[in-house]
Length: 136
Length: 229
Image (cartoon, rainbow over all chains, first blue to last red; front, side, top):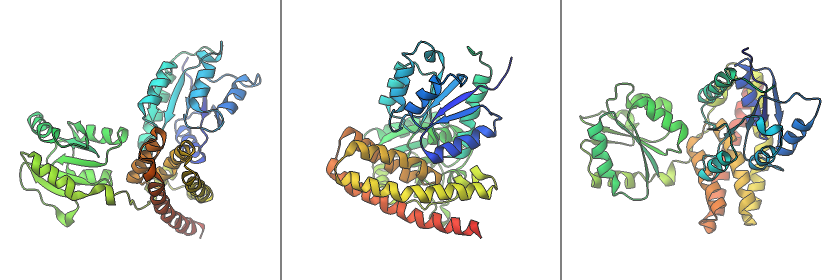
């Protein structure tokens, strides 16, 4: 069955949040939750009232618990480690890229300045995951 | 400097690679079509473009519509530089001395980070939704002054790790106001802070970044006023 993935976005920057909400809304993605740091993200995943997301879109530079720490934490968790994590960041540092793939991310995308390019990246993401089967 | 060369002809690319190889202090990126060049611009921190005068899928004029970065034309025949919109027009086959001289004459590092802010990106995003523009400009104006004050303080305290994090955060705002060269500059500051390099020079660079962004605050205020009427 084809259905839009339920996405959890971890992003702390208010302008980036607006941008991502706006871009995803044009792609008919309705099931979108946003957490502003790794701690909020963990609380969200652990909250039994919430259905687990099919996909996590993760920024790296966040306060409290950053993207790397969050990633390392969920990859040690019996259930959460099965959720594919896609990095969406402004950092193209090799250190970051390396560390993320070591922690088994499903992809690593760098945010472009240009908005139409930004949208097309998210569209590719959506199109790809639309054709995937998910655990739940 | 990160320099992108766009050339469809394989032999010309070879000649260029040979000529540029011995010029130190630059990272060279090569694209074999206009389209590939555009993709490179999206993904690499390019600071200068050198482009063939006659590409099948786009010409230097079209490149100026895509970017605010400085552009040099490298052409097999005379190429008109109307209104001096290109930083230089060079003739093939390119020679090391000429390329090196042209690059050092440009003095790009000193001037070209002073991007003028524009509403292009935000307008693309809003697609006519004025409420959205107002909302984004308001966030910009509410957050940026505090962030700049905090960065100034942290860099004076020589707290490089925290300075790097905050400068990193500025990049989404710099992007929103369509200032690509300034974004490269911010990235450079962030990298230097993280790698603890040239630390003595950082506060001065940070002050410069702040000064340019303060001008963008005036711009954003004016744009906000226009929309509230």
